[in-house]
Amino acid sequence: MITLHHLSDSRSQRILWLLEELGVPYEVVRYERDAQTRFAPIELAAIHPLGKSPVIVDNGTVIAKSGAIVDYLAQLYGKGVLTPPQNSAAYWEHQQWMHFAEGSAMLPFLLGLYCGKLGEAVAPLQPRIAGEMDKMLGYLNQALEGKDWIMGDRLSAADFMLSFIGEIAASSTGLGSYPHIAAYLKRIHARPAFKRALKAGGPYIFAASSTDA
Ligand SMILES: N[C@@H](CCC(=O)N[C@@H](CS)C(=O)NCC(=O)O)C(=O)O
Image (cartoon, rainbow, N blue to C red):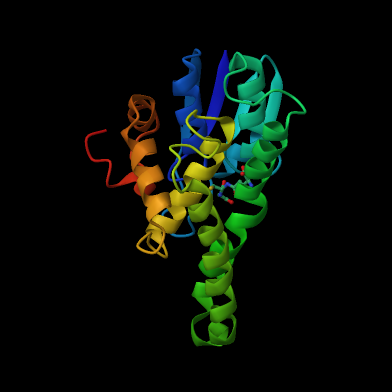
């Protein structure tokens, strides 16, 4: 049985969504963020030394980092439908999107979050941060033009990684300048499996507009 250690309002939601799409048996252990610091509770460090979420445990194997978890679940339980054939051109394009989410796109958003706490002191950095956010979102927006999913007409593992980028952007910069990401996020949030994931994980601030979940 797969156990997901799930932190409220976090990237772990993408794993819940994936588990629901896969239809595999799993259990969720829920953790709440500290109301003041927004940090995870110390109990998560007993599962993995980083003390962050998501983490899964499957038959004694502990995996942290959402990219590794998505890869693991897609390969072991995805019956080949969530990843393009190994070593095809599509496989490497898909790999690029898998890594883009946490390796590139998240950085300016995290910088914005932390620097935002410094007030005026950070003003000289703000244009650079905003420029990097726009670069990441502009790139993703263009890639999604004319497509339902990042690899075309079929949902793939990379879509689970990219869902959180759309959500964090919607809640910070807004998606007014990125209509293809906005439409993509709507498609994601409309999926029955995404709605089931919301029920399994509890309130999720980044899908607040998906009210009927
Ligand atoms: N790159 C990691 C990031 C993990 C991460 O930073 N998780 C956040 C939630 S989105 C967390 O646990 N924050 C609470 C804390 O740092 O105490 C991943 O993709 O899994």
